[in-house]
Image (tube, rainbow over all chains, first blue to last red; front, side, top):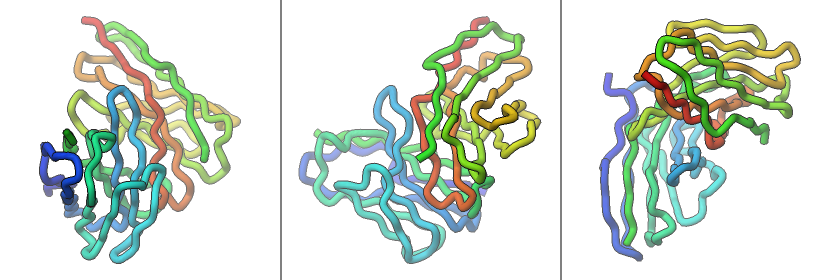
Length: 113
Length: 111
């Protein structure tokens, strides 16, 4: 099992460019999440999904869009990148329920110049 | 949202036990207490979770106060590989709205 795989691992964007981050999980998890982590900070939730075709906003959703067309994939889009979106992005997935363990990807380091 | 409070950093010696505290005074009855750790340049990884009773697994133990307003993660014999940022988080019964991470505790292990 690969677990949670994020693509790409590194990316440099120019201000105003767009890109999509891909998260794929092979554990048949219902729930998927996108977080961002800034230096010296904990993770902050951007968007999440409780099932195929459904998404919801987290703590810091502005400037991002998401889609969950297939159960195993969760895409995070930046339509017009800004330097404030320079961060490390983590995807996670889990089964439903408060006791469920979340599995995280290795992260995507994004720099917007 | 239920929030947690942890010390910014702690230091311990290798092969000694480590007790990492967490306060969660606004915890609700259906909130689970989860601990994750993040090694340098990696994503967080699950350590342990509990609801009311103390819990043990191969990585650590979790001691939960009787009033559930605080908990302690116990590493019984720290190694250099345990040096990481440890996050105490709460999840509601449904778990749908994800984990809320604070800044965590940066655990430093001295050889």
